[in-house]
Structures are given as structure tokens and as C-alpha cells.
Length: 435
Image 1 (tube, rainbow, N blue to C red):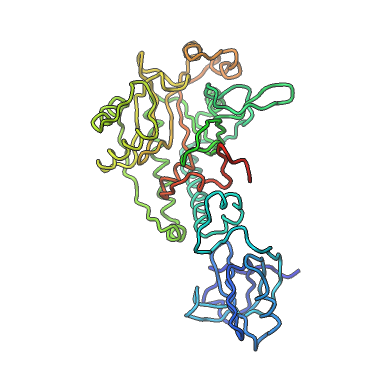
Image 2 (image 1 turned 30 degrees about the vertical axis):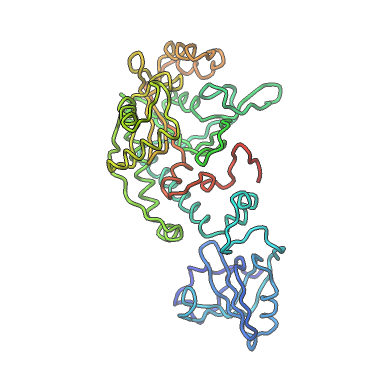
């Protein structure tokens, strides 16, 4: 069987000139001027030009120029240096294998100058993802997730995978997707929270997961998804939430630095990456309210910050030369039941924000079962619904803490992308269940 590809477009260099290669990909464009035709082929790493000559092989020229755009072909031919074309070379074809013929008209253009509306793009996501800009986002996404694994494993964290079908709500509340699990009622996990805390009782000490979040929140904004991904982490034998924040800021820095190595993709997106300054400032919830009040933005003490309040705070911090910042000492009433109290009204919870967008939320957790049950009851939760979770706290649970860090929101800030739906392959929101 003939080889469909010997080289990608960027793999061909001077040493391949005047040699035979086989390339494969999608036909991005065809320009036929009679005696000669230029066919642009796109692969996963770039584009290249195939130059078909009538005098060389008229039948091959006719075969190539008759194909619709976005058809898939494999071409074998001779590499010739040509400083006037992209990549500095062209391929003179000797044979072509048509692998798939695209129907016409295309539901969505790939290199067309007229941009389609967002819904049309998402309805035809498989074509939308052929665009260089979209591919660049997901190549960078892959790199920064690779940085997550490298950074955390170097610090002794064990990667785990916890269930997405669970018997009780991860964080309480009503924003959950209920499902039928045979004869029982179950839920899609809001986060791995209950399981990763349970693992702190096993002696694993440090765990992390690239997790899926399922949240039935009726948002329809540019920064919310109903199915999203996150770095979820838990670590035991901590003295305070400060140790967790140090891991988080180091992780963000490592991801940011790794993104900075993606020169080709950043150039496609016309983005530059500047290194964040460590450590990130810590500002208390009360200090945040004071800053906002000076801008005539009033927040009732105890309330969580909304989108507008976060935006204004981001502007304030930007004026102070700060992109990343932790908000600490949140009111206990605004945090989940497992958050460790700090006195009567405050908590050891924190959020990490970047330029007015919340990226992560975490805390030191409660590790005493009696206090945990008390907090559940205060928030209207029945401890009987959390038997499997509470059991782990009855037989030796060390002090611990952790966070959940949104991958899509991180990419939004990193690459200055206005809509979070650009940062996940097949977005799920309030109105979209397909493709």
C-alpha cells in the first residue's frame, strides 16, 4: 500500500529539494490559469503549494482542478525550490490519490474573508476547527495542559480520575443535572470535590485531576459554560490556605511560560505573552469592597462578586500594574459547606482573578467531621445525603485544601479571546446541545 504522507508542510526543507515526497491534506484553494494551476494544500502544520503543469501532465492538472475546495488528497511529486511561493518551495505532482470529495457548496468557508456568524460556525464546528486561528488555540491549550502535568508531577502530585456520575451534589444547591441511574436518581458532578477530599484520607496526600464540570446554571454569557474543564487539586498536611495559593500561582506561571513557547501559534493569533509577576498580590474581601466603593460600586457585605464588580476591580488592579491577584478572607456565608471558617464570619477561602475574570476558587477545607456536619445543616443540607463523603472524615483525616482552576477561562485571559466558547472544542451552553 502506498504511503499517504511522507512529510508535513513544515517538514520540507532544502535537503528535500529535487527529491520525491508525498504530502496530504485538504485543498484550501485552486487557481487555474490554463497552462498552469496552483493548488494550496493544508495539513495540520501549515500549507504548501502544488504546481500542476499542463505540459508535464495535462490529465493530472485537469483532475486536480476539477476537485472542490476542502476535498482531501494525497499528492506525490518532486520538490522544487521557488523563492516566490510560500515556504520557499513547490511540489510538481506526479500522482494524486483522491481520498474524499467535498460536497458543494460548503456550509462554512475556511479562508473566506467574509466571516460567518458565531452560531453558523458552531453548527459546523468540524469545518470551523480547520481554520488556522482555531487550530492555534487548541495547540496552545494542549501545551498548557502539558505544563500542568509537568509542574504538578514534579512536586509529587498524583493524577487521579474520579466519577462524573455521583449520588449527591458536590457543592449543594440546585444547579445540577439530574439523571436516572437505573432505579436510582443521580447527578452529573459539579466538580470532583467530594472525591478528591476523600482521597486525602487515603495517604495519597497530593492529587490532581483534569476534571469535567457539569453545572446547570442558566447563564448565557460570554464567560460561562454548562460543561467545562478544570485543573482540580487537593493537598494534605497543610497549615493554611497560603500553601495552596503558592502551588496555584506557581502553576499559573508555568502554564503562562509554556504558552510563551508556542511562537507559531501566537503569531497566527497575533498575540504576545508577557511573564506574570510572582507572587500574586493578596487582597482581602473587605479591601475589595473598599476599592469598589471608591468607584461608587456598592456590594452588600457577604455577597459574592458579580460580573460587573469583577470587571471594575480588574480595571482598578490594572491601574495598579497588577493582572493576577488573590481575593482572600471571604465571608463564610458565601462559600461552600466544606470551607474552613476563620472566626465566626470569615473563611479561609480564596479566589484567583485575572484582569477582572475569576479563574480559580479554593480554600483550606474543614477536616473535623462534627464541624463539617454543622456547616451542612447551617446551609440546609442533610448529612445523610453525604454518608460516603463523611465516612472518610471519621477515621483519620489530615488538614487539607485545594482549588478548582478553569481551563477555558484561563485561555480566554491568556489569549485575549472574547468568548469562552472559542476555548472548548464542542461548547455546551444553555441553548446548545449539538454538535
